[in-house]
Amino acid sequence: MGRYLNAIFILFVTCWICSFPNTAMAGNSVRTDVRIIHASQGQNHIDSGLSDLAEELGSVFKYTSYRLIKAESMTLNNNQQGIVNLPDERSLIVTPITISKEKIKYQINILKSGDQIFGTQILLKNQRSITIGGPKFKDGYLLFNISGNAL
Amino acid sequence: MGKACKIYDEKTISKFIDNELSSKNIKMVSEHIETCPICSSIAAKYNHLSAVFVQSASKQLDIIDTGLLGQNVFEQIKRKDHDFFKKVFDYFPPKFYLKIASVFAIMVVSLIYFQERIIKPTNLIGPSAIVNSIDGNVSSVMIFETEKSKQTIIWFSEA
Image 1 (cartoon, each protein chain N blue to C red):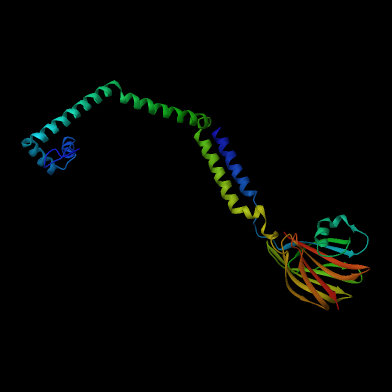
Image 2 (image 1 turned 120 degrees about the horizontal axis):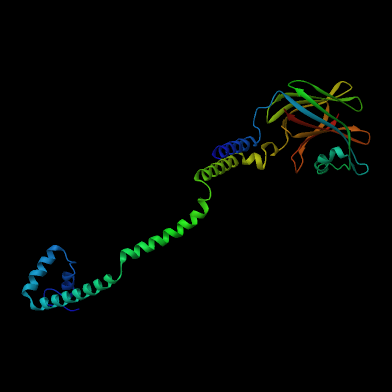
């Protein structure tokens, strides 16, 4: 009885300690999710894939319609480029420069017909996202939501 | 109380009988009583009163067994405490309670250490991104964050 009690005790303590957030160092790759969104003043519409974003964007922008044009998920290593093709001969290039458990440094470039029209370097918090906009597209604008999850 | 004689009053004589004077004064008063009839009679009166009191008190003490009384009181106190703890702590062996206390202590220390990560992970506090640099063929750039989740938004206008 005493031995079983000891074993249960040790098992419980071990599980308790392991249940806390994993503070181990992140590896050298990051899962990068990119969502290309068309925002416009048209009829009220929010695509199901944007339910987490719509409220936040709605608090900042005056647009009533948010449509998900494209969603891509890439696992990128340090300095590996991730390219997402956009409408109107545009392309989005996302490159993680440094990856840590807390922050990911990204170089983000938007090109049109091969020429860079916008470039930014950001420090994105792990498991958070950033939204960049707005090249004109049809009767609205394009938004790029980029999120990073260090692996 | 007035003066017993010109030298000592009744209060002093009373203190002498009760052995409450300093040794020097006791000797002086004692020598005076032997020569002063007034002080001598007052001393005798106080002595008698003292004897009567002691005798009466002794009789009462003989009736009450103070040793047994004290013993009964202690046993009652002990029994009350023992009954309460007996019910709670004799149910499991002491080692069990020690383990429970250890687990509880570990949980408390862990909660204190990790409380911020449990309640609010650090990466959810503040803006989601910091913008280090911006360049490109743009006419204007705006950077702001959403109210609720503090998500960073960069808005640019093409030139």
